[in-house]
Image 1 (tube, helix red, strand yellow):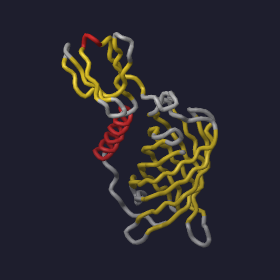
Image 2 (tube, one colour):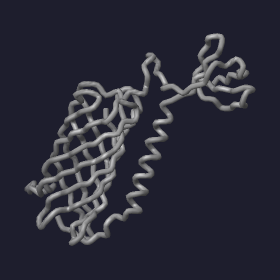
Image 3 (tube, one colour):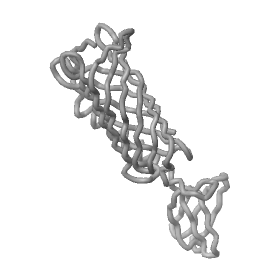
Image 4 (cartoon, helix red, strand yellow):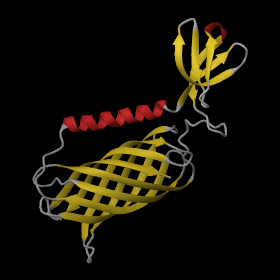
Length: 240
């Protein structure tokens, strides 16, 4: 795999990447809550408050799109609570349970480093694994990486173990992942390219009962002929 000089990714680029990651996580987290109005007569109304006049009245839109109007002297309290699904279970849980875990990832890596050791790449990974509990999983993956060079594109096949640890059992759950393995060149000879290590940090965002959206930022260290290829990569994927 040939290499070429590329400008290292700047701190400004990294700040922008992390800013968009945080904004996305916060936006999804907010969608997991709803307004709940407790009335003095014992009724409980769930939905989204669309208008509120202090000390006078409020309007709340329910999930079926009905709009209810109440005087404030009818209201005991107003709170935000996790949205519940049809079975009455809170959606704030990550939903991760013991059993099979599949992960599909796509991503792009920005070459960093000096002395011709930084090369951009695109990638696709598929991981088959086992979820031990809401916090830990172990899997084995493969896929394709396309390394971009001024003169050609190198295609390689990674084979790796993937370990993931989620910090909390929540709808939006930060995680740390480590991929460790070996890479082969996608040629008839399948010549070994070298050892790879890919630690990453991100968040899983629950989108249904059994699936989640994954967004992460990682650092790839790939051994190659003549040295190492180092990249900062952005990952977007889904687990199921």
